[in-house]
Length: 505
Ligand code: NAD
Image (cartoon, rainbow, N blue to C red; front, side, top):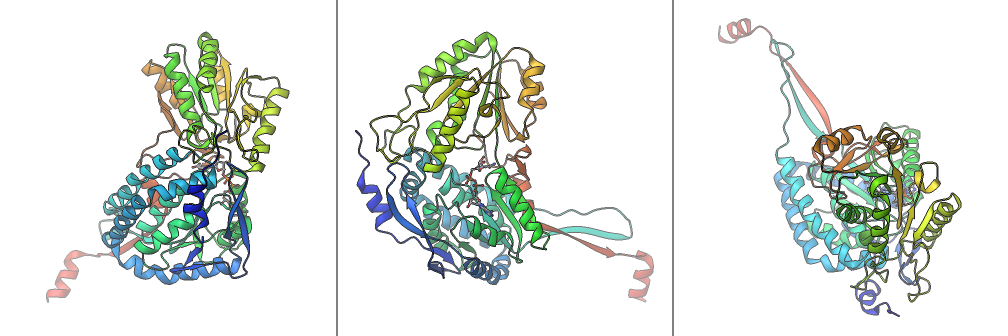
């Protein structure tokens, strides 16, 4: 039986105090409340993290507000220097951050190193984009000059989901910061360690109060959402929480700009002309099983395969899936780690039972693998065939290691099924026929559609979905502009000749 290494836990967790960062100080919550941190690979309680009360959130917002004018006055070039410094610190701390995510979140450590590496393009990309920001001159009247400029909101609130903790902790603050806002960020209460560690790096690279990190659950998040000085809030998480946040923002009595990055139930459409092996590889890659156990918003959780290649596709997928090694997340040979918590294990297992009850064929997996720590949240990735749109596993976001395959033969019915949910985050189309590929990409109701690819997104391409999946777009110019308020300056020029005569006479 592979035993979990004690060393990374001692080295990266036990020997550290995990504190919040507020106004350049590392602090516990004022009320002393804490939350246990549980290792999803073993079930062991490793340490505690602070739980911020509304007073702590208030302190963080006050610190952010005090730091904002000087931060804005630095200009894009001055702010970019802080980004460069921070990028170096992230690189120096790569191993620590990746290990913390493996230990705290259960994602395989190799995948978390890759997550940190991906952040480089964001750390470079945001300053480059901001340096190119321009306003408009609007020629609406010959006797007037109208131009636009941008101003930051002030203090931005950022609340993130549990599944890519360090990557979210590094990249999600960047667009608000480069545009001159200061920040209060709350990571998921389930996976806060790497973000708390990042607080130390932000503190070294940025002036005190520019980045504040508070930890805690729904009550902490709610205090941030409803705080009167947080006029711009960005949220990544589930649809249910996103809707609640919109409501709570409005109930606070202030008009807030809220962007939402929410869930998906994403269709992967495979046409019969496409190489079956490549499509199977694409389906596995797109499920992110060996990155975060399928706990990814953009995963192709509905794989729709044409009847002509369906049986071969299912068999080959089952075969390739059987080679994935489920194990302790900080063991280098692990492909698939544990899911994030006991509660989530129960939730995903409940969906696997529902799939069987609703008549889908469980081809393989779906149970707890043997030979691993007894209290780890391990699940052998489940492969379901014969899934239909009416089944719960066919229409609800599971957010776990479950691959669901649908069979289709009529194009219009397939499209209606693919578009038949309230979610529309991503989709993918797999065919060698260019015209079919583009027509289908156009017809799919999703914000981000891949053709013969999956999962990868690049800085600069707007990421987000339609319907209940998103409000706004991220990782692009659209996101940068969403952290800025427009201002129009209107100058009356009047009659040029009369003005000249007056001035010169
Ligand atoms: P969640 O909604 O349970 O929690 C997300 C965050 O909201 C956490 O920080 C949590 O503490 C906080 N929160 C919970 N209740 C709150 C409240 N009432 N007020 C304020 N904050 C509150 O989501 P999760 O389980 O962490 O993440 C999984 C979900 O996130 C999935 O639906 C997934 O699709 C989605 N997600 C979306 C994207 C994207 O970019 N579209 C990326 C990652 C995850």
